[in-house]
Image (tube, rainbow, N blue to C red; front, side):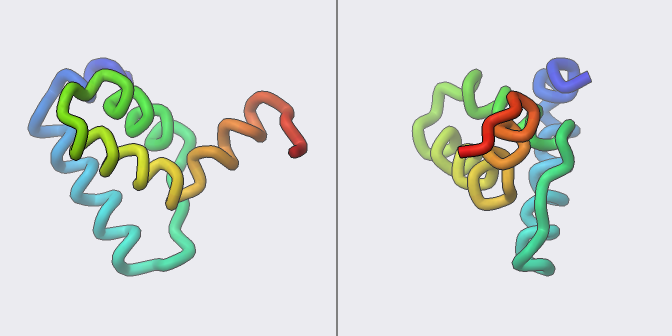
Amino acid sequence: MASALARGGGERQALLSAIRQKMDSDANATLRPKEAVMVLEWAIDCDDRDQKADLLSIFAEMGGMKLMRAAFGCTD
């Protein structure tokens, strides 16, 4: 699912817009696991440095690393 959405530019932009709105409206908002995976995949595949930085910032600010640590059983 994540890969299909990543290839669909319109769907990707719609989802990123929704994530940004979520960030703006709730300072404590976090990504759902599927959203975190999609954002990280897009950042990895992105060739534009500014967009990559924006995606990684969203991932970090919205708890993506916390989700990764939990998924891998890291307690540090």
